[in-house]
Structures are given as C-alpha cells and as structure tokens.
Length: 221
Length: 112
Image 1: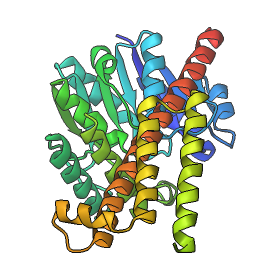
Image 2: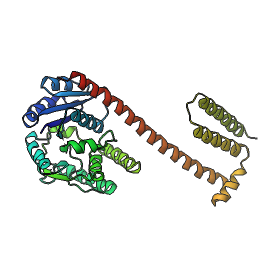
Image 3: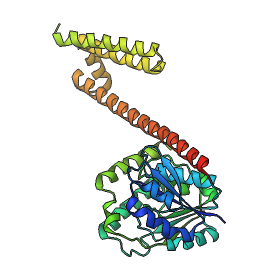
Image 4: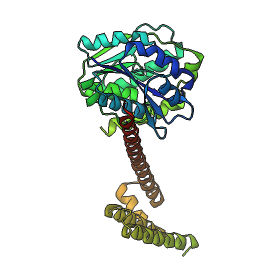
C-alpha cells in the first residue's frame, strides 16, 4: 500500500525542511505543493527529497490541496494524507490514520478537539464556530472541521470535487464526505502550537470571508 | 426640461450605443444586450417623463414614484453584484484549473 503525504505550503521555508524530515519515515512519498511561494520553500523541499508541484501564482489552500491530491493520484497513491507545513502536526501520528483507513474508513480527520491538548481557548471557540457553520450549511457534524491533518483512500480522493480555493476547503471536504457518503473516522491528534504556527493563523476577517464563500458554495450546489 | 434630465437621457443613449457595439464585437451575449438596452431605455424614459414612475409605484403598491425607482434600482444593483460575485468565483476556479495543470505537467516531466 502506497502512502503519500501531501503538504500544501505557502512561504514556509522556515519549517518545511523539518516537517519533511519528520514525515519521511511514515510515508512512501512526500508531495509538497508550492503555492506560489516567494521564499525558498520549493528549493528546500526538493533538496530533502520531496516531489514538488509548483503553482505559478498563489491560489490558496484549497487549490493547493486539490493539486496535491491530483499529483498523489497520478503517482499511484493508495492512501493520501494532508498535513500542514508549519509544523503544527506530529507526523508520528500518521500510522494512526493509515490504520483507520485499513479499518474501513474512506476519510479520516485528525481532531484536535478530541484531546484539546495544547489548543488555546480562543482557538477552540473559533473551531466550534467553524464546526457549527459546517453543520448548518452541509449537515455533517465533526469535532474539528478545520483540521488540516487528514487521510483519504484513493477512491475517496478521486471522488472529491474541490471547488473552493482558499480556507473554505476544510469545510468543503467535510461536505464532500457527506455528499459521497464516505465512512468518516475521527482520530485524536495533538496540536503543536508554536509562536510561528500561531502567527500563521487566521484572523476574524478571513473567517467572515470564508463564511461568505461557503454560503455561495452551498447555494451553487 | 431640466439639464439633469437631458444629461441622463444623453448618457442612456451613449450607454445603449456602447452595449450595441460590445454586442457586435461579440463581447456580450444577446440576453445581456437586451437587458442593458431595456435598462437604459427605462432610465431615459423615467428621466424625461418622471410621471411614468407613478404608474410603477401604483403597480408595486408603494407611495411615490421616486420610492419605486429607488426600490427597483436597489434590487437590480443587488442582483448585479451577486452575478459579479459568482462570475469572479468562476474565473478564480478556471485560473486554479490552469495553474494546477501547469503544476502537474511539471511533476510529470520531472518524474524520476
């Protein structure tokens, strides 16, 4: 079974090398999607032995995940994982995702809220709002709709239709799981919050914009 | 006739002429040509013959002709903004498709 990690990255030169190094032991191949980075992200990723898919211009998280999954499918992946490039996910938890897939799940979400370890209170609140919006619009409740640590079977990745470009993608993937009637598993993960990863977090206005785009996504079916 | 009435009428004619020329160049579809022609004709008529708005007001059941024009304008504006929003999303999606294709081709050619 070929396990491929997809790491969408936008200007993550500071952390991408270490993330790749830590991930390597748990997967067969690593695909970094350089989402129009202005820094050395792609160069570093290549030097650490990752495959790099390069977006000529920045298209956002959703677009990067879409490209990463498409590249993974082309490389013949059986299991596709997504994880963040800022180092907030612990790659040693990957085997748990693969096991959940082996146990019959089509899609696995790593939930930071099953343990709540290391997550600041205001982040928990934003997360709950994200979950609520996802549920209200798309009818599926999960404990961490905004998690970037996920796994898909090959079949699931093929059937997912990502239409949004940016942060909306997290909720959209849940919606797609619901629409395709995937068996969805949630497993607890730790969130490693550093000053670096917190500084990369989303602000209130991005949240409002994300909400609007999700509403449009819902209406446009 | 007030100057503003003449100005609006002239501008409406100009806008219609523009819409027709854009249509001839194949840049707007026929339905949109019809929309803009009707829209600007309506604006010109309302500007030159303000009493016509009273008819509209009676049909809609609002007090004054000016109010009716305001309500209709707002609805039209909101609709156009929504169309624009959807269109922009559509363009964004197409750009992503293109960027993705280039990225995947590069991965293919660099393979092994």
